[in-house]
Image 1 (cartoon, rainbow, N blue to C red):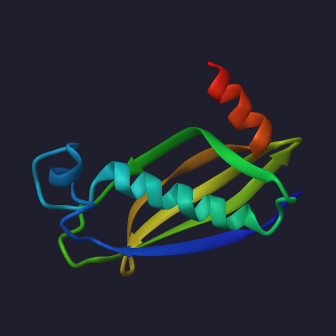
Image 2 (image 1 turned 60 degrees about the vertical axis):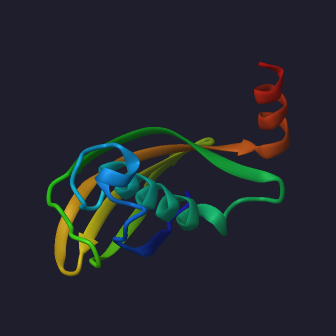
Length: 124
């Protein structure tokens, strides 16, 4: 089993607000951007366990965004591998603005052969 954790960081700015990405009309950290940060943490958590030519794709995200974060806030997202079964990897996710938790959830990714995956995508 892959047993890794990774944390990534961002700052809330004009490009990652709900207003900027169209998920609302306020200048606060956007839920889609929080989810993207969480997925980036998940990718980093398993990056060292992938073989040459492998990548991973996200297939499911279940997240609650529980608190707003203003412009200038420092955001961190952590992904921890909780289970692996074959090519499927499951994660526990959290996001924080400083010490305050602003989001929590779960995520599933599948390890894939990148070249074969892209061939299938391009044939569609």
